[in-house]
Image 1 (tube, rainbow, N blue to C red):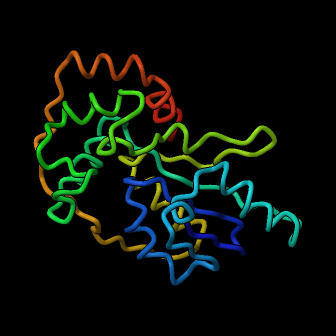
Image 2: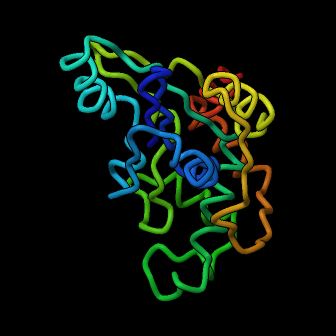
Length: 197
């Protein structure tokens, strides 16, 4: 999470949406940087609103606009699947090394989810509190030019991104049956992505 006080902007870090690259490029410019633990670094909208936004309301009588990035749902799961197949995950319950992507998505659709597929939900990340505000600016991950343009204009600076957190290459074959079931049972994930710019 990065907060730019003068610009009244908070950049929330949705996992697996390139937030590490933006963090590296912008942390020196930010007024407030949260790098951990993961529950705070990747604080969803409702947690940010309850704790962090509340500080700005009570102490400074102001609110930060929220920017965040959302990724196409199947691509997002593919990123998690590859990330969890790293060598340092071998033998860990999160490891996907010995699974196919289809197995991973099938696991994601179980209730409860097995540990290897328990990666949260982008639509839940954007859920608001009953009396809270949602994200002001939500961009699609694939529209990096729009994200960069918005941030460069808002922060009045040039931004150079480096590739970070690069995962191993893996086959992301998904059967038509699994994809159809996923799209049906997790339609809110696609709606969340469709609503972004």
